[in-house]
Image (cartoon, rainbow, N blue to C red):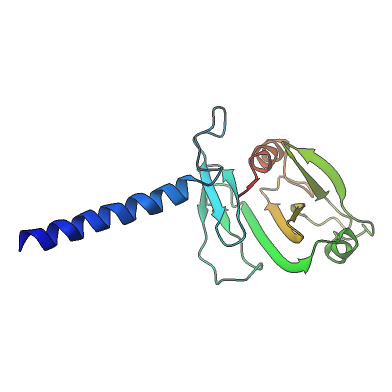
Length: 174
């Protein structure tokens, strides 16, 4: 009787060790040195990318394949981070359809860390706009939008923008 239990325990330990190794194999799971080392990891195993985000943010439960709800929310500031991968082929000209009011050109390229993102900031009309970053993820469009906090402006304040750049610098494909 004891032998089957030992075999079961050994099998369970082997399975958990194998799954732990798989999770640890994503580049964002490695413990980096620096400011973001204590941050949490957002990993999309289906689209094979990850990034780090501040510990003040919490994941938001959402149905699969939706881009209309935030993926991460900061209770303290009310800020949200939207993360979306669309099935459409990555094309800069297609991104103009979702541009902030008053902007009719593709988003500007900006180099952050090892990656080039395409950025839309504030638009016109006196409305608050999230900082939108688009990335060519193996031919698909990855968008990461930082929505707030807003302090009497149309775009997140400098402190939030610094956090955005740190999070985006940690984006990795695997």
